[in-house]
Length: 432
Image (cartoon, rainbow, N blue to C red):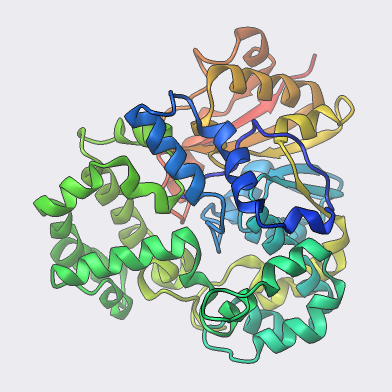
């Protein structure tokens, strides 16, 4: 579950000296994330769990963002002239937003790997020769010359820190960029989690990729009911998913695990079963590239099924024309907003970052959102459980300046093809 990068670390600028890629960078990245995650004593069981999560989260987590950009853009009523602040994550949505020609998109993240990925995506849009090259790089699996395209067209334009990230060699001696010669989406914590899910299903005699042979929603439903659903009743799986660390690969920290489990019957297996059921059964496969990644472990080919907006040929010209409107910031979101003037942001995209936060962090965030929001500004976010988490936790004086759009929120939640969240939420700034 794409979770984001909360808001307790020291702000950093857009560019870094080469010393920022020294050997202690992973430690410092983990420390920054840890400041947002730690809520318990270090030597307690909960504290140890939080620290393990922060360590894992210091590297690449989301090769693909798991929030549906079509739902985002409809809820935001995104259009020309809008100024957007969003959490970056895997960056797919940032590029999708450019199809609506907003005035500015500022993407903020604490995870240095995601910053490197977003910056590379922008340079790829700018400098790869054609839309076909862009699709081969980010959409196709097994394109062995992608790393050569990186060397020729992208690397010369990257900042030094991002270049260092992609050109650093792993223990087998391969440069990190060579993952794009194989299948980038099978990497990162999320990619490894999905791979583990496939292995577990196969251990119980089920191949999740079998659903891809479905010709209709009825076929998809039949496959889920007969093949996938029974796996969640296995005692071994129920025991494993009762451990908070089992969901670290989804980017779910311990605090969010506690929120997520409230939306089921008290077992995490039941929650995961319900979310997978929506992914498998509620949307035709031809319309849902999230399901392709979950079950087929790849994107469809052009014309085979829907693709992420930034990889659709029809959107290429608009995205390339607007790519210079994006800024990528390795920063703390609260401090980033604190540096903006009042009433200068029209749209806020928080992903599910707030599920991580303490009440103090939530109030600090919404103080800055409220100050920087223009009249009519829209805030969207997702939560692991169904209800909005703001009432009772954010001060009434702040929430009274916003209208919660209950009906629109429910509609967006139902139509979110990523299918893994309990709730989608939309708040609109009231006139003074």
